[in-house]
Length: 200
Image (cartoon, rainbow, N blue to C red; front, top):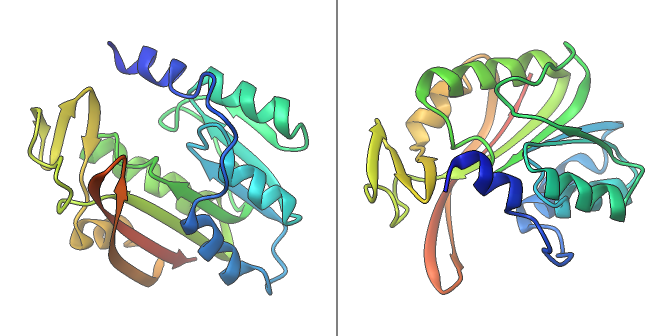
């Protein structure tokens, strides 16, 4: 199955789910600030986008999955949805108070990843917050499948695994607030992540 087909169908018939804990933690940091606009990069079926919208934020949600975008539009038409690839979508400079990326930035080669982070920096308003969560090199899947590049493997689809050092490098233009390792259990399998919070 090609990556394009995988992502097109990934969110088809997915039931509505509560917000990720990462989104809840993010909101705790922004709730007392005078933020109005939030961009959800790689929003999937919109579980976090809907959560932020319910909290009163004006949400723009981007994903390459048509099934995911349809799910959001049917459940919360107030959310502005963009069907598109993060590599190609154009973002207006200084246009968002918050940019949120939950497991959406670890699918690209190094050069593309750097361009996307630069695009995020340009789109974030001065004083705004950027939240990113990516697969970690400590994840059991790291090293499995066909090697595509440094810490990058194809197993069903491409994954680019982050270290804390690599995340910090991607965040060079930002002021880094925190970078930390986290882990959880997903479908009875251990998973490992790098979480970062940064400002402009």
